[in-house]
Image (tube, helix red, strand yellow):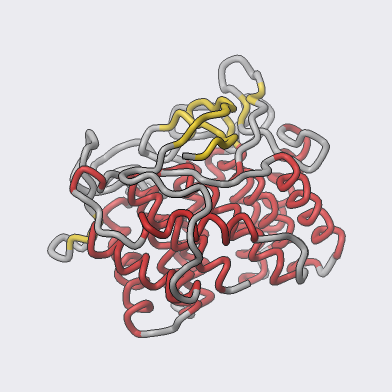
Length: 367
């Protein structure tokens, strides 16, 4: 058992943040409690990523439906698009790290399954049945599609990402001064609706050379920094759609998506000031969230998004930020990530945790 400071998020399994409260909690690992100082990994981090992904497939994948299953939810058996996006992110990262036919085929298979979530009005529903569309969910899918395009050069993935972006910009809130809203009919404006869309726009601008994407990126970036930056390198969670009050909680993935936005600007413009800003965010996050990062479920997935952004930063600016906390997390969580899960431990929270583990391992292995 380990005392940690973490960010507790009240969130439904569509992937959309409802409210956030900073808490200092005592966490127990699911199943057998892990030692405070877990043993070193029994194999290379790359092999750990491969092993954890294969365990995810054994525990959650339904080959007959071509979808991932979970238990214990209101909408079982098939998981929402938010955890699906994180499994896809893990699969793409693993395929980039180890370009085997198994890993590449998994990426193509998951992308082919996304049509079941697609809305005729654009973007992706939260569930395989008609349901709300969440802008943060659609951000993750668009980023996955762009990553898959970069890896496999399939033009259909680029076209799909462009279509998602066309949906995303319909969420610009003209009634309350801008920012992308949380979901259809919900006017909270979270960082994870607006910030990832900056990176999507900049990456589309780089590939298509269309000025409209750069224009949108500039608009989104200016809004995020004027409304949800704390002025010291960190980003608050969201603006309430009714009261206009700012939820000032500091959540790991909000920092990660703004690191990625600045990296995307640096790549497109060549301006080192953006890399300096990304380094500033990483430094501020390391100071604010000292760890250890021993989280479960969606919280582990949030942290994985941050760790992946740090890996991207180190690729653009060597040794800019430490991944020691990620490495320590991999050691601590390996007994759970490597073990077969009982049916009661195959919920959407569990698949998010397992996908987050793979994403974190890929980030460390590629460092």
